[in-house]
Length: 348
Length: 266
Image (spheres, one colour):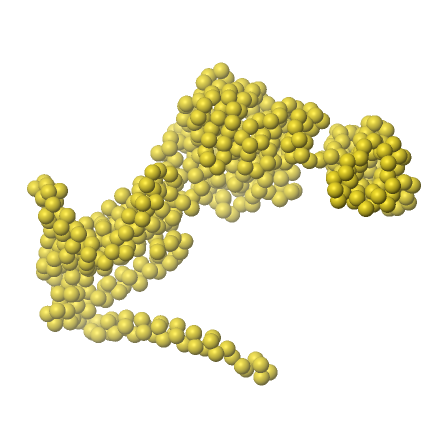
C-alpha cells in the first residue's frame, strides 16, 4: 500500500500542492487531468526522482520520502517509451537485473517470460529505433516489470499511440494487471482510459487533487465545475449492450440506444449533444434512434441553447442554435422527439 | 518551349560563385600536394626531423584532446542539466577562447605560466610549460576546449533527462545512470567532438608558438616544422608537413560531417 501525505513540490513550471492519496495493494489507480497540471511530477516524486518540498510518502508503512529511487523498487514507464536506444530490446528488458548482478541465464529466462506475457518475443534481438510505438511501449513495460516492482507508474502510456494500438495495449495492460497483480498508478488525460482501467481515480488540477473516487461516482457527481467540464461528456450512459442484425442495442434504464460500434456486454455509450436533433413531431429518417421525451430544462448560452430532455428517467443533453430554439418556440415541459444516428453513438 | 529555355539569371550567377569558390580551394590543396614528387615526399617523411614532428604532434594532440574530454564532460553536463547562479556568465566565458586570436591566448598562457607565482610554483613542482612540449599541450587545450565543450553541451541537452530517471528506477545511482545511459547515448557527440578537437589540436600554431616557441627537435610539431622549414627554404620538408596536415584535416572533416552533423559549433 502506498500512502502520500500532504506532498508539495514546486518546480517553477509545474507544481504539486498538498497532495494526499491512499492507494491499496494491487489496485489499478488512475490519475486524470489535463496537460500541465503536475501529473508527471506526482509520479516522478513517488518514484523518487524529486524529493518533495514538504509532506511524506509511505510504501507498505515504511517512510520512503528520502530514499533514492533505486531503493524503492518502483517501476516507471513514460509516454515516450525512453527505451535505451543503444541496447537491444532484450538488453533493455534485462537492464535492471544486470545491474543487480544476476546471472546471464537467469536474466534470459526472466526476459523470455515477460516477453511472452507482452507478446514481444519475436522482437528481442531488435533495437528500439526499429520498433513501432506499441512495440516500444510493451518493451518499456516489460523492462519495468522484470524487477517485480512494488508499484508500477505509467505516465500516459497510451497517449503517443494511434487509436487501434492504444486500444489493444489498454486491454493488454488490463491483462498484465490481472496476471501480476502489481499496484499500478496510471496517469492519463483520457477519461475513457480512466473508466476502462481504473478501480479508483483521482482528478488533478493545478497541482492539486480535486476529486477522488470510483470512476462512476466521479462522473455521476463531479464536485466542481472543473471536474464536470474536464470530463466534458454530457451524454454518458452505462448499460447492457446486445448485438442484433449488425447493430448494437444498449439498454440504458429502459431506453434502447442503437449504435454501430459493435461491442456487447456491460458498456458505456456517449453521444455528443451537438449531434442530436430536436423536433416537435416525430420525423421519419434514416437515423436509427428516435425517442420521445420532455424538456426538463433550458440554459441559454448566447449563440447556442442547452436543452435537457428526459426520455423516461434518462436525461439527454441537446445543443441547438439560438435561432432554431426561437423558431421552434421550445418551452419547458414541452413534449419533443430527439433523433440521432447509430453511427454517432460511441460505445466503449 | 521558349519559356523552358529561359533560365534564371540569379541561378546561373550564384552557381558560378559556388563553383569558383570550390575551384579556388581545390586548386590550393592540389598545389600543395603536387609540389613535390612522391619519392621526395617519402624521403622527407622518413627523415629524423619529420619523424620527430609527427610523433610530437600525435602525442601532444592526443593528450590535449584527452584533457579536453575529461574536463568538458562534467562541465558540459552541468551546464546542460542544472540551473545555478551565474550560469549564463559561465557559458559566455567558456566560449570566449573561440573568439580570442590564438596568438593572444598564447601570450596570456605565457604570462600565466611564466611570470605569476602560480606558474612558478608549477615549474618548481616539475611542471614547466614555457618552451616545452607541455606548453604545446596546454596551448592546444586552451584554444580547442570550447569546441569539445560546445559539442558535448549540445549533445547532453539533446538527451531527455527521463532516460536517466528511468535508469534510476531500474536500480542506478545518479552516477551510474550517467555512465550506463547518458554517456553511451552521447557516443556520436563524443566522437565528433574528439575528432574536431584532435584535428584542430594537431594544426594549432599561434598559441603553441607563443608558449612553447619553435625549437627544432624540441617543440617542433608539424605546423611548427612547416613554419621553420618554410622560413629557411627547405621546401620539401615543409611540403611533407603540409601534406600530412591536409590529409588529417580532410579525414577529420569527413568523420565530423558523418557523426557530428547535429552539433552546433559556432
